[in-house]
Length: 467
Image 1: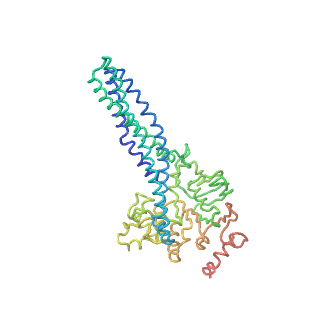
Image 2: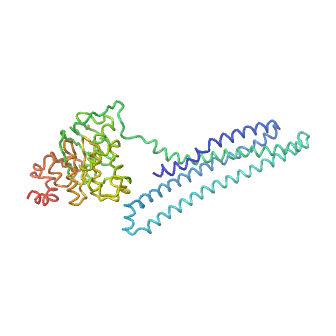
Image 3: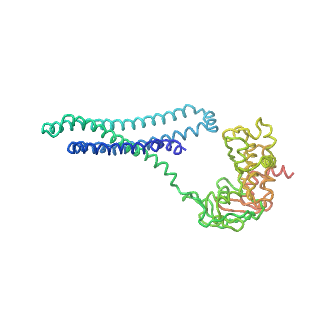
């Protein structure tokens, strides 16, 4: 964010006036130089002899300011990060609960002082350069008067001609000084350009194949074949993953944290591509279809629901911008959130605050489900959508999920017994591998990880539900 805000603002001035300054001063410089040569070529050579002395320190100052500007922008990025982390709703709450206000204030102040120190250094670097320019600006007329006096004694020039030449000389050195200042500003801005283009030049990791086609309307058969994937070179996240989900089936992914469950859903939506192996939907390799046409038919409801600081209506329309009011209301009724929305003062136009702070966890989750219903995807992914909710919120979410899953292929990542029991198949994962597969009834009868998880987490609840 700092590169988008601070760095882009930093180069704005270069684009705003640089071209005009360069053209204006270059034209003035050319006109004055021709005039001086026409007046007296000997004095002109002496006057132009000073010009390299203007240019010589320019490169050094430019390099110095480039280095300081790069350090300054890095510190500004650090400062922006602190502001975003500590002043957002969750961050501010954590700071207060942990009583770290003084520590964060101290950290903020230290970086501010460092930024001030760097900006002062940059100003000083420009000050001595301007001092040198002023020295050479006054040295030129001194030399002209000295040599012009000699030519006057020789009878080649009049006093009036010398005075006129010196007057024009000031007009020569002014544009030169301006052009050197422009050069320094451009050199400084190169540090900002480098930071900006580091991001602009990054290649998209996931792109459409040259011959990619539109994904037809998905029916729902999913096939993973010998999938291997890793986020880093040090550790493989998924190892030889193969399974098939038939159209309309619900498949549950079960396993300890870090076993690769969520990564499978990322690969299905092509947020990442596997290192090897093939993922097919309805027999089509998902790498052979356009990403937008694929993702437009996949809906995802996660545990950490993201809600924009906007109205409930705008949050719902994010999944389908052209949806009508009737569609919005119907989606919210299916998600068991319509009645709650109608109790709010502005109804669907109620602003929910940053990350939905005015809503409870269950309310945010049901809005997320309504958003998925509005999208009407052919494949639904539920990533621990009820894991952190109370019993009442969980029941409301479960009631909302049932119509969402009806007639659709779904992948459910959950630790809740009711969700897992209803699955057509359960894939048990451990350290990136599928170690067991089957229905709840089949797996609970076999020794293995699933039964261990069942006995530790689900048995008491199952006894209550089944008894």
